Length: 366
Image 1 (cartoon, rainbow, N blue to C red):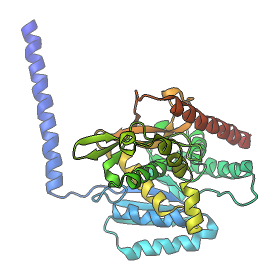
Image 2 (cartoon, rainbow, N blue to C red):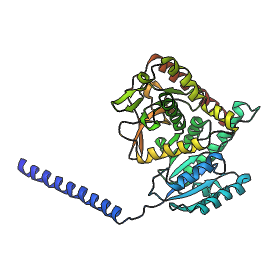
Image 3 (cartoon, one colour):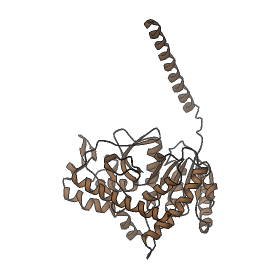
Image 4 (spheres, rainbow, N blue to C red):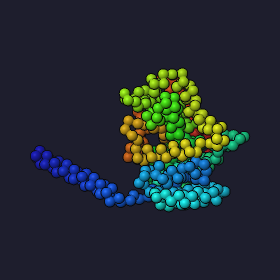
């Protein structure tokens, strides 16, 4: 009887080996024969705005999903921006991007959301001078409630959503509430811009290439309470990876000026340009989606605003920025990182702000 099971197990292993080998051959043949991939449908809301205008050519060129992935762009904006949106569509056609297999430009949210695989939510109501915080929140709650309903009914079943418009974390939370059939792990917000800003500051300080710096963390809210953390960050050198703290050798700078520079970088850009960040925000949105879909490099993590599962003592049910790794189209929060006293206080402070934002958003719903 034991011999029978051994033979059976051997046969099963042979079959599994053959299936694996066959699959590898098919993939190799597909690559050799240059069989084109099916286009991925990507929605960009607020597409006629600054960020949208910077973002859509990046997507069409393959920056977001890779140099061999065809895309169909769905662009949504409000009716008053319809003419400008059509101008963007015309420019995309004129650019003759080889990967761009179609363009939909519309102010109809249902048409925009139809069968989309990825949704980048750039559109939102900006805070204007003299406006109360609750008034801005109320307008964005209305926008994201309507767009969530459209995604819920019309997007592809496994649609991945990235919220860019501020308040990004809370807008993402509202979207999640009104699109319950979209898995909670598929709804994220953009803190990669802050992550990239932190990498840039370390690169400038140490006079090294930004690609040699890795594993900074943005904890919490995409706001001035965010916590840019370098305690686990490293820099590649000829002698291996060295801790950022060791190389900078200035804890006072890292614990003060560095943090505030990253936190207030958006305001500094507005002061310099008289316009908000657009190019860097668009590039970071591409980074976010690319790593989520195609995976992060081994030994490297990135920052994403994701649905909290209680990791690191952060209240469940918030959209909070954590360090994550990505593989097979899924993100996972990096576990087991040591949190010092300063970090704990700053992580809790930004979580507190998110709890307050959540409460304010829900009061707008009621």
